[in-house]
Length: 299
Image 1 (cartoon, rainbow, N blue to C red):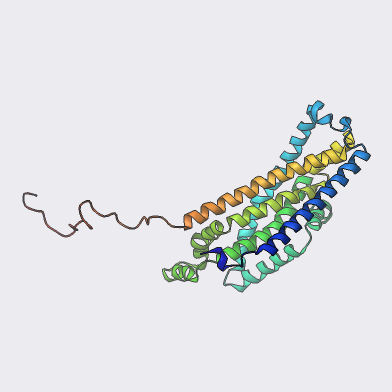
Image 2: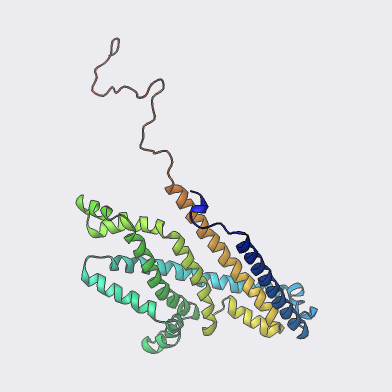
C-alpha cells in the first residue's frame, strides 16, 4: 500500500513551514543548553575537584555496585512474587464462580488504588505494630512492590486471556476438562506469551519503583547515591551518574521487550506448516500402502 493513500504529501509551503519550525526549535534548544552551561559554570560545577572522586576513588564504584545489586535483588524478589500473585488473581477474576471472581476483583482494585509508598510504609511501620513482627527494609519494600505490581500484572494477564479466541475455552470444556484445567493448561500459557512484552515493560516500572526503598533506608542505588553525594559533596555530578545507570538498565529491559515482541511477531508470521506432509519424490503424492497385502515376491 502506498503511503500517499494514508496522508497527503506535503507541498512546498508546508515543507518550508516544517523547515522553519525545525530551525526555530533547534535554536531554542541550543539557547537553553547554553544558558544551562553558563549557570553551571557560574556555580563552579565544572570544577575538576568535583569529578576527581570518579577517577581517584575506587571505593565509589564498589558502593555503586552494592546499590545496583540491592536494586536488582529487591526487583528480582518482587517480580517473582508479583507474577505468582498476579497469576492467581487473574485466574480468580476470570473464574465462573462468584466466590472467587468477586473477592479477586476487590483485591485487584484495592491494591491498584492504594499508593505504593503507603503499602511500603505499612509493611515497614504498621506491620510490626499490628503483628509484632519486624520486617527488614528489604522485605518491607518487596512486599509493597509485590502487592501493587501483582494487581497490575493480574490485569495484564486477564487482558491476555480475554484476547484469545473464545472457542478455545469451549473446546476444552467440550472434551471434558474443568474450568481450572482449561485455564491452567490452555489459556494461561498463551496469555503469558501474548502479553510478555507488556510484562517486561511492567518490570521496568517495578525496577524504577525500587527507588522508593530510599524512604525506609534500604540500601538500593538511590540510597547509596545519596550517601555518596553527602560524602563527596557533588550532587549534580553524582545525580547524572545515577540517572545514567537507571537509564541503561531500563533501556536494556526495553530492548529485551522489543526483541521478544519481534520474535513473537515473526513466529506468528507463519512458515511452512509442520503438519503438511512433504510430497514424495517423483510425484505429487506417495501411494498409500495401508491395508494392502504383500506385493509379488514379498512375504
